[in-house]
Length: 485
RNA sequence: GCUCCGUUGGUGUAGUCCGGCCAAUCAUUUCGGCCUUUCGAGCCGAAGACUCGGGUUCGAAUCCCGGACGGAGCACCA
Image 1: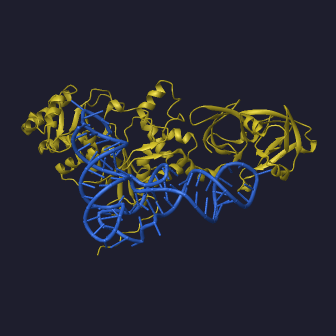
Image 2: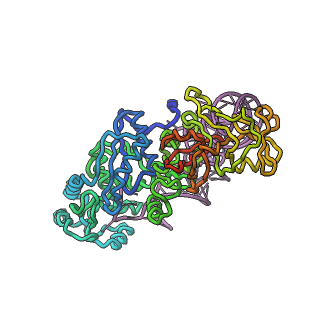
Image 3: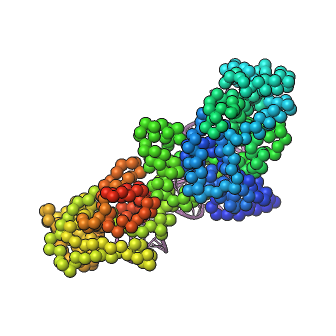
């Protein structure tokens, strides 16, 4: 009889083959700010370190000078901080070049790598037929000589190849490139180096030297993991546990970093934090909380099949958090002005309404009730003539033609007539609002006077409208970014 | 084309390795009801899934074969 399966803990699934503490790394290429796909790796790494103990390494993989955005180094760290992902050690690969050279040399010396001067197409042809290229069997001394000359060679003249199985059933695995010449200025090291390691080489060397126990990476690296295993073997190193997760797509934001960059350059997007983009900063700007993203990633976990995340899902998670924290305000989008005739003197004055219905200790906001008010055009139209409309916490009115008439102030009366109960703001003292929607369109309206107390970054619940984050404040208006209902 | 990989309700997941306790978990979503001067939350109730076809077996979401669909890779990017 076999033993029973272990009982799974709720939430994030366990990492395979854990013995004691783990050493994990998050290793992005600095080509732009982090996007939602990065968040998956970052959050999972963080959570696993939290679960098992150990450490998280941040490693910036900038070994292709052409694919480095100098601004990305800082943006990525900012994004990680927003995600509340901390790292215990940080490395930048462009400052570790001598290390890669040393191991490259070693690999040549043990005859597990060779300098290849074949033209790319020729090599591919041979490779596809499982044929070694002529360089493969030249003496080690020959490779060493060429290796020493590589830094003076032109781009493409020669590469260093790792010996794998030339008959490997996947052609991609056969004798892959470890080192090559790149004639481009590196944002950090300038022209100091011309010979750069390929990702598969530097990653393997680093993962080993840094003692990484588990490698969490996207399934687009499946073949790379296979390639890297050969290098571990050649050096006699222990292979870490590879975990490949699937692609993460966000509904409506299928944009890659390169497309987003293009769009920004073309002026199509306002910047990396344009609400239409899937970057961490765009999501943050929309009032999505770090907690919601973390929960989402833990729920999705590290499984290899692809996941399409809907905004409904994100909103649901986020709402549970914001509901508790967000204070309430009245916002009137697409406003129309009403002027209540015969509003009794006794009704005119300040209406108090709690900032949060479940937390009266947070206090009240004050809404001046006076004849001239804004309500939404939609509510106005829906009500039509001769039906009661209830202004929340205030009075009942009816519309007759273009006149607005005071009806009563009794809530039950409004209820009995099935009146809509709607938000309103006074004309006097309310603040202009630009509401930036997820598709970057802007809805204009007014927010109640007490919103002047808000600070940039605050997320509020605009009653009957939804959650929004205050993005900027000027003398003439407040700009909010809409999150969700 | 070649090489890998995946497919559980609308969505996201658990379960698949080691077949029975799975007429399938949890969350979200949707729809009712209660409550509530917003939305929501809360409480109660409901809806909704094992990609398909064979096979093995007393028994299959789970194992085997085949198909469909989807994805990734096939670079001197990471």
